[in-house]
Length: 115
Length: 240
Image 1 (cartoon, rainbow over the protein chains, first blue to last red):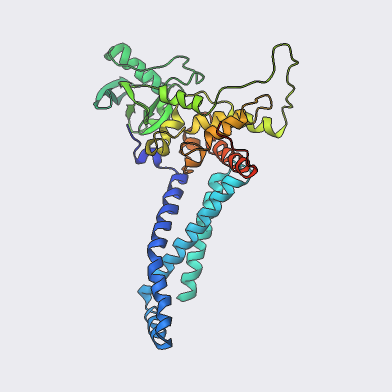
Image 2 (tube, rainbow over the protein chains, first blue to last red):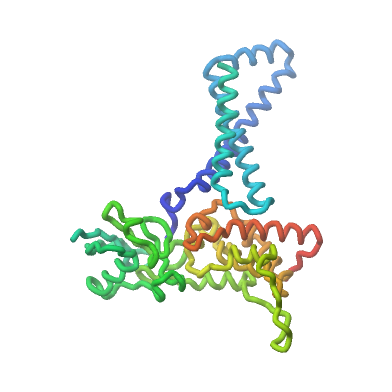
């Protein structure tokens, strides 16, 4: 018999899902990122047109999501490195909460900056 | 007297939940509930227990979807809704009803070199281990495992990679790594460094979350990861 969501419903498992999902989504975004950078190869005007397109509110919202994903992936990774390479601390859940807090703060800071 | 609606797994890998009404009593444990069913309602129900006081590790089951030691789990804590679902431990073959075959679980302890390997004889002096030495403290943190299988049942990696040694076996290996008397660490590190060893852990921490003894096998596995990496960098990670 296999575990279902009831066995997995605890903070560290959610952190695992966020870390994996953010990694997959960031990897999926990379081709678009390189395509955008590639616009510069076609001249300044082409890149500028694209950059003006990204000023739309919906695109800015998507960028905020990207920043949030990036921050969540980074803080989650730092948390795992701390867990595995530093001496064990009994407050692993606090570390997890701190990682989530920093990621949310980073996303919010970006959003406030563009609004 | 109020009653508790209890759904109990019947059968083997394939089977179904059978419902029983069990009288609700004060300070009732989940093991009390299962025992009442077997003694008063259906004597064919198969389950396993021994000490009833949280020492032997034989009564672990899946209660409302989570692996727990049933003798120390009060109904008050898990049956607020008046309903309990009791199933055998996950990730282990079901023998019948609530009884699982623990063979794989314990074989993996042996595969992780969980046997103490001393280097002295009865004619030698007793080893003197300072209780406050760092290694002894690390061993202390992980030594109280009762082998109940709750961590193994809660671990998704065990389900994804059936060869994975699992949290309990790796935790045992870590206690011996920190035992100053043990002489088998080279072979032990080689045994836990493979694809089925400590590096397969995804750090879900379900083992640490569910361990009824509040042990953190995640900490032990992290220790083994560091030890195997250090041994590999020294060129000392033998083939066992």
